[in-house]
Amino acid sequence: MSGILVIAEHRRGELRAAALELVSAAQAAKRGAADKVAVVLIADKPERLMPHVSVGGVDEIVTVKISAHDFDPDALESAVGALIAARKPSLVLIPHSIDSFGYAAALAAKGGFGFATDVFKLGYEGSEDSGQAGLVATRGGYGQKVNVEVDFPGKDTIVLAVRANTFKPPEGVSSPTVTEFTAPPVRSRLSSRSFIEVSSGDDVDMTAAEFILSIGRGIGEQANVERFQELAAAVGATLGCSRPIADAGWLPKSRQVGQSGKTASACKLYVAMGISGAIQHLAGMKHVATIVAVNADAGASIFSVARYGIVGDLFEIADALRTHFEPGS
Ligand SMILES: Cc1cc2nc3c(=O)[nH]c(=O)nc-3n(C[C@H](O)[C@H](O)[C@H](O)COP(=O)(O)OP(=O)(O)OC[C@H]3O[C@@H](n4cnc5c(N)ncnc54)[C@H](O)[C@@H]3O)c2cc1C
Image (tube, rainbow, N blue to C red; front, side, top):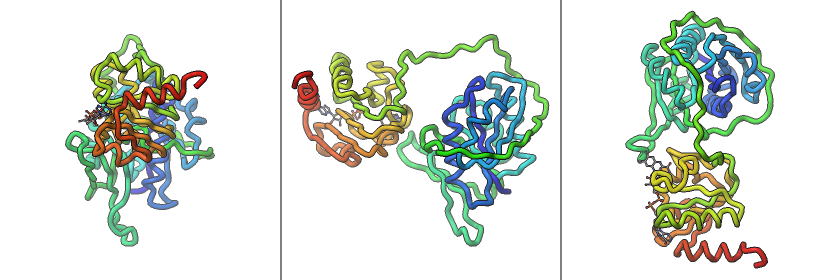
């Protein structure tokens, strides 16, 4: 058993960002140069996606032509299952996404594969020299309060659904070999009338923002949100928030940073105001190079990841900042 299959997800023929992140995850999971990475394109027109996945670290592209234009869990389960049977890879990476929820668990259960979802770290434990090192996948547990390391003793093939925004897409291009694979015919149980794109009502992309000013429950009440919207606009930041703010509907869910929200992937400066620093919030921003935290409580966990900390009232600090950025000041 060797080789890594990356199942590239697309939405109606448009490659999803997670597909390329999986290529980097595959690099992290490689045991050596002999462990080849193959990106699998399962689509009605897979050849159209080929240029987009010819990126650094990809050795091969496998095209699998299916009739479905929209996502079809039966077609995916059948095609990936047949490919695993034919190639016997040691590892199969798929995105942890709404699509993979529809087929990955069934695929793993029917094939008797090792399986973990929402994985954000990969590594090996044990002796590489003796060939006994086993793959260890890390995911959250107990409501994301602890990190759980999962191993897969006795499993020849392991299927992992990898959390989005945890691996950076690879840089550079490659010239992978291209192989066609014929999927077995499948009887789909799905029928659809039309496709409707759901709009979040807020087109901000928190993952692309370089400067984020995030507000938490410390702002007290909804009436204060506008004040921070103005402050963010004045300092040139994208306004983000912790989960209670999004849950209360004070800001759209797309603005929430953290484990069940967005990861501040491109962020260089993160200002957290009135955010305590729960582990779930830190999951989305603790990697940022410069974190500035403002909190009235000197013992708040947010200060453990902050480069600069201000113990004080966030409204006073907000006013001081605002004055500083006022035109003519
Ligand atoms: C499965 C799961 C997923 C989750 N996902 C996320 C997620 O993606 N993102 C997320 O953020 N949370 C998430 N959470 C929730 C998380 O556990 C915390 O409850 C949440 O992050 C707390 O938000 P907060 O820091 O804004 O509020 P609090 O913890 O209530 O902190 C408010 C802070 O404001 C400070 N403060 C109050 N008044 C002032 C003032 N006047 N001036 C300065 N400081 C002041 C307080 O000292 C306090 O530290 C998740 C939880 C679970 C169980």
